[in-house]
Length: 369
Ligand SMILES: Cc1ncc(COP(=O)(O)O)c(C=O)c1O
Image (cartoon, rainbow, N blue to C red; front, side):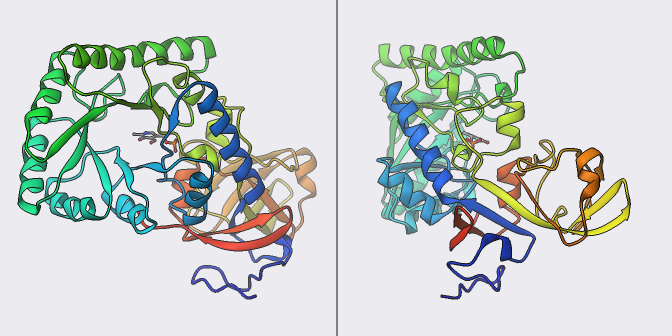
């Protein structure tokens, strides 16, 4: 069977991965399944739910596997992603960022198909979301986003968070279900003991808000937090009820090298070809900025050869310094690497070439952002 996709041509189920034209984004299905299993085991061992973030892959085949593992709720970064999840019949969808007020009518249309949760962090949003719910004849579930130290979005913990929770609780058309926080500023703390303590302290702030909400009779059944780079520690915090981590399904060099996450394997790779060897010290591959991202750190080459340093990326050129064994690289030779950061790499592509071992098993689309 030939596979049709506007970004990938000449790919056939059953063909060898090594024959797929480069540059190409590949996903090892066996590893994806093992990563889902490993996270499922980790969550269950710690008594947590998993609400996997889908922003990194937005892939129906991955969402299907997450559901098969028992996880029916998802986290999204945008309303568009949430709408996409709803087309796959996902109902329980947390939009873990604030939705621009002008899109609240669209969010209300989504609320007729699914049961989204809005993350609110300001009284103006509460008023606007309540108005939109009333206007459109729907109800929104809502959680309070609390800033637990990242200094991104989120209401300050303490009085401000409690007042916001009370306002949501009173607002017609809104159903208060809990709180969220994201410890994203602590993912790459180099000392692991310090990292564990800093994450625990950050989540303690969330726990204090939950405790006070409960004391005041405000509903707080969801306490949502955690990313791939922190889930090792976040899963152990007693107040957290669910983890938002998602990138671990694919993994990448940033999570392993900088966040020191060892629990998951690399499923995502980019296959490239050496197209030029201008000097013995320099090799050029056909994977530049339009193929992968290095802003969170360089890729790794798990199958070697040793001695490669990424000097720079141009649009369609990857410029490599080569030393030691990598000096043997020849024009035409294929090089496989794990991207520096999966999320900023997948956004450059519209599909994965899915494989088991060295055999292509499908083209898996990457949905809209
Ligand atoms: C709100 C929120 N939760 C969780 C995550 C973690 O996502 P991932 O596990 O894909 O790194 C992010 C990442 O940016 C985020 O913004």
